[in-house]
Amino acid sequence: MRKDELETPYQIMDPAGKMLGAMPEGLTNQKLLEWYRLMWEIRYYSNKTVALQRQGRSTTWGPLNGQEATAIGMGAVLQPQDWMVGSYRDAGAYMAKGYPMKALFYYTRGFSIAPELVGQDKRCLPYQIVLATQTLHGVGIAMASRIKKENAVTMIGVGDGASSEGDFNEALNFAGVFKAPAVIVLVNNGWAISTPRSHQSAAKYLMHRAVGFGMPGMLVDGNDVLACYSVMKEAVERARHGEGPTLIEAVTYRHGAHTTADDPTRYRDPKEVEYWMQRDPTLRLKNYLVEQGVWDEEKDRQIREEVESYVNEQADIAYNHPTPGPDGMFTNTYEKLTPRMLKQREELRRELNLEAEVK
Ligand SMILES: Cc1ncc(C[n+]2csc(CCOP(=O)(O)OP(=O)(O)O)c2C)c(N)n1
Ligand SMILES: [Mg+2]
Image (cartoon, rainbow, N blue to C red; front, side, top):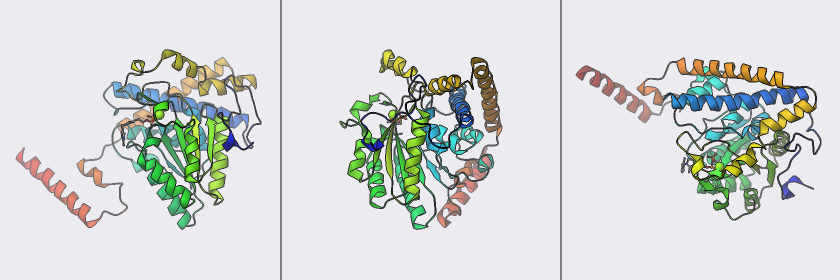
């Protein structure tokens, strides 16, 4: 059976960590141990950002907890020349592509990218907060790669709520018509703030929309890192070989609040949360690794300690990094400023000096 015909999310590993299918080619226990650590890096990065927001240091933050397997699938299937274009809750996918955590922490201070913290270009667009706009940017980049005959695929992350936006539909329509080398991962975490998935669309699965765009649609268990990797890799390879885009619906769950400005107990049934906590992607991978005899509680405690101090170090670097001045808004957007922007920057600088004189 083709995966796009499945009526239930594709799984390789069940919630207890038992294998239901074959290990995807090329994956070793060593790789899975790296991913297990990465899952905790993503989760602790998110927890740390919540703490920084509570101290008044980070901007409003949308926790990533629970969505680590989907994130790792998205990032791990990419090559360095590929693009990652996601939304605020896809930061884990950026890490899986190799984007440095300190550069992501810097972003949580409310500034745009600090290239000196990113190092060599990672081909990751700043994650987007205006819903679904990134789908247009991503499909545009993919179309450009195709025109330039670059061997690059664009991975686009978008939420279940954002998939109701016009932008999403326009972007996917273009992607289908022009066979853009893009993979669109619709991260269905059940909720768009307090709006449940059932209010987004009457379709049984959101991936069914793919039919209308003339592209394959796939449904995957977003908490099964092996299934995510397998399905996303197949889609990336199809895109790379000129066979066009794929829409993948990854069914997952956000464990926490929508953001640091939200109280989910006002609209979510605790039983639903409990159901999903038992399907935690870290637990599933841990169970598998323990079963394989390569993991135990002591190692688990150790790695979590190590990851916690690594995350604290990365946050310290970012939060002590120099901040741009008021004219910093003109940097890092265009390679070369347009004449109008040059004029605006001069005007701003002049005004700031004038103000300084008045004081
Ligand atoms: C165009 C636009 N409209 C509204 C918002 C406010 N908003 C921020 S997140 C969000 C819900 C998005 O839900 P979903 O796409 O499912 O992503 P999730 O937050 O669940 O990851 C809304 C309505 C926004 N950021 N952009
Ligand atoms: Mg959602």
